[in-house]
Length: 438
Ligand code: URA
Image (cartoon, rainbow, N blue to C red; front, side):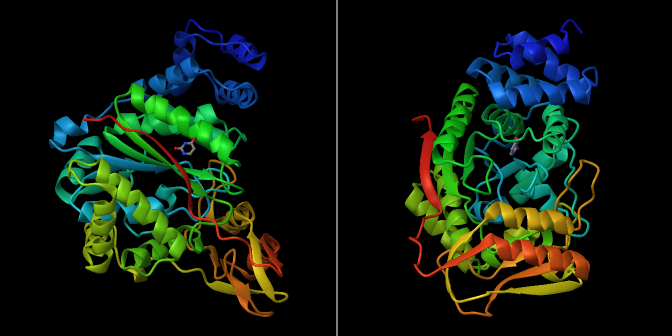
């Protein structure tokens, strides 16, 4: 190794810039195990405070991509493959519903997902609630499944972007997740390596998201659009509300149930709206040659005629899982959280609900932690709802009475009730895109 990690950490800490080769060697050295966790953690913390320039972000993204293999989906399938990714939120099971709908509409979707980070859940953890489901497919299995079944969602294998996989786990437990540059490089490297030509990115904004303000979310969106454009991909960024949990369910198996209900057309309104919006954009970016309005119509039809559910079942079976809802684990204890008085829900803090779920065991506090897939929270009332005293605000699903009582206190504290109904806020707050005319 020709670089001296301590010098690079110091330079970044003091606000200096690293050369492309230095970023690349640091990232690849970390992936090989030559740069230890403690130095990479210190580097990430320096990035938290100093950021990365566009050139450094690009060099990091390219190093992530270069740390493993890449797939050329268009060459493998002779089709334009689409992909979708979220920057992470609370109750975000969007991909699990979007994939089967898009596949049911005849558009192949191949996606590489991550695990939970901090208070946000990860798609892979949710999918592992399904008995038998395999998130680690070999690359040739992944490609064959996208071709034959219409979709696949896998974890980062040792083959694709191993450097990001390793760094993602480290950032999770060192408070170095919410940096625009690190998130942009992490997400876009996975998208570029997995080979989709058209990508919809769901950039979460608000209390439960890594980006707290619309302004910051726009900066992240622009950074990802730039990386996508440089890699020749069409990218649409949806900036969406994460000031309260998405949908009702938070926690792995609970979220799976909600995604399955949504595929039958029985999902919560905010979640269903986001899913249909993402599908309309993906279908419009695909090789079907349709616009967003037609994409939305086809996505709605897939919910209504059962083809989205059939695509879900095909997908889960293809990855070794049992698609029936009864196969999902259930927590032994369910406690209801009641409204202490009457009023409108003026606030439902996403981060508080996310942390309550984490404390129940739905997420990890250290990278070695195991997850309890059955536990979590179902928010029966959301912002703007009118509640009576004693009405159920939420359910806590827990493994024992003590953790249920603690989570119930945390969930209650996440609710604020007031006399005035808050203004309705649409799930889609803004949109940015970089799509080639071709
Ligand atoms: N999702 C990712 O894939 N990476 C991040 O860094 C944050 C969210």
